Length: 154
Image 1 (cartoon, rainbow, N blue to C red):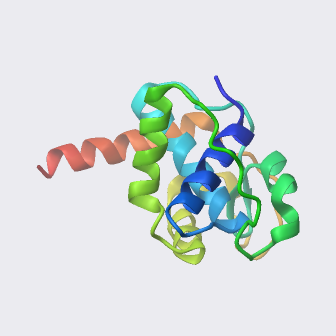
Image 2: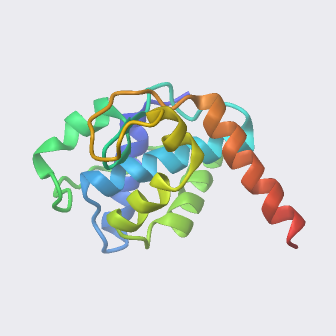
Image 3: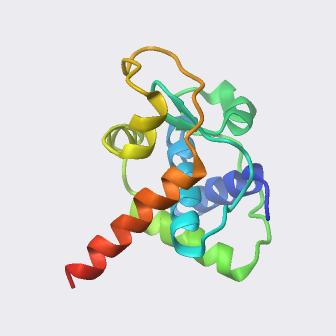
């Protein structure tokens, strides 16, 4: 298993290589989708760091703090792309293919419409702070059901 910070470095390096640096807000949503889809596809977490249901969507607090200084601006740090297992690299590339072209705001709205974030917040108003954890089992269940929906539409 790898650390969320390694995944973040990979995603940031990927975005710089493709000429579209990410903000911390967008990075947090990409980390969330990388974890969620890894749980759904491989039945195990990509990383162990917890994900919390914050006002602006899912957040990995340890990575958020690491890049907090950039706030809403593109992260200027251009890390060396970490060497990861080929399966993990392919997974992260797929996540970027699907979600990488979306804006931070689009990703935020998307997460706000999905059960894992909604259930973790437990009825807390969208604009009220929360550190509620988005459970891995809930992510796995929800995104696995999305896999089955896409299979049945083919």
